[in-house]
Image (tube, rainbow, N blue to C red; front, side, top):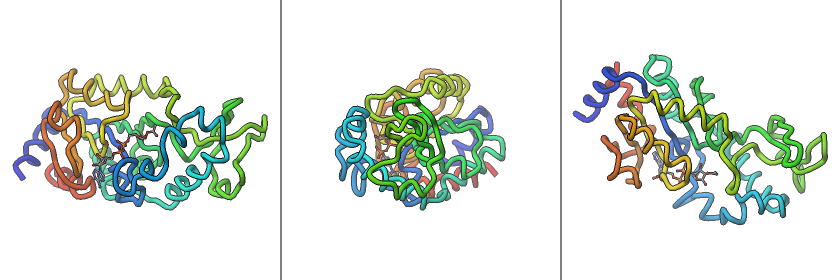
Amino acid sequence: MDKYKEIAQHIKEKGYVVAFTGAGISVDSGIPAFRGGQGLWEKYDPMEYAHISSFKRNPEKVWVMLREMAEVIFNSSPSPAHLTLGELEKKGFLKAVITQNVDGLHQLAGNTNVIEYHGNHRWLVCINCSKRVPFEPEVIKITPYPRCERCDEALKPDVVFFGEGIPMREMIRAHDEVSRCKVMFVIGTSGVVYPAADIPYQAKSKGALIVEINIDSTPFTHSITDYFLQGTASEILPNILKYLE
Ligand code: OAD
């Protein structure tokens, strides 16, 4: 429990808190993580299903997985962990969320400064003309795959596939938040996908305190983490809030 007291003290003294989140924070929302157990990448080979060249070669095949993902996302709602991050922003402690998740749950939980490093699955984008439209739940029923109304090419969720770059605007926003950050919560991420995984290292090198929340250790834990809080994000985050009040 002393750990929580110390972390709360650091937050009160240092101020600017940024959360860096991964799939683990959405597990309690009913969205399985990518790696291990029920993970999507245990069922689908990411190089076959999540690489942009695979999508361009065979959108019909990749849409089988995308439909499954969309159904899970549309049926999800914010977990106690998401809601706590919303509360932490309202109370003035949390200034930004940099997320690798594409489910849009941070915004639904009330966070207003959310940087979606890997895009958002609730939007569709045309692979030819880049027209962007909301991903309405009815689209799931369209077979073999949805097409752009402007140019008739395949639509894909507006998420970053392997082989694609991070959107420039999000990279710049993340860089800006990292340079202001004094305490970074690193929540529910395996820390193996780059360039996203570099963000906590950048924060640490600029002097931020790293508070990691995960059920297991990660490459961050024994290198840059100052406080490792082991457990689910939905158990741990409300405790941090309690100690701040
Ligand atoms: P991973 O599936 O790689 O890792 C999930 C992490 O969450 C692991 O470290 C788990 O131990 C942890 N975890 C699981 N349940 C948890 C819980 N209830 N509370 C806290 N932690 C929990 O997911 P990411 O690190 O987000 O990229 O994956 C990074 C990127 O890989 C994703 O954004 C996606 C994927 O390929 C793209 O699609 C571009």
